[in-house]
Amino acid sequence: MRPVAVVNPDLCDKRPVCPSMRFCPQKAISQKSEGRFFGGGLSIVDQSKCTGCGVCMRYCPRGAISLVSV
Ligand code: SF4
Image (cartoon, rainbow, N blue to C red; front, side, top):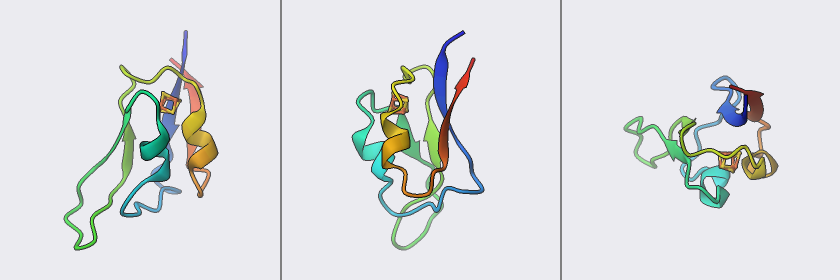
């Protein structure tokens, strides 16, 4: 078992530049392209890269990220 970050799609506001994505030390977060003019999209965590450090949770302004055990 190890901790990994997950994004709640109902809380993620899909803003053009996800702050959690910018600060993830593992570059484990990407944003799904949703074809918007200003960019942005649902943030997605690559669990194979995530170390469960929790940095992303501190930067998400919507509290959309939590850690779970996998
Ligand atoms: S827990 Fe750490 S490694 Fe995992 S997505 Fe968040 S910032 Fe990146």
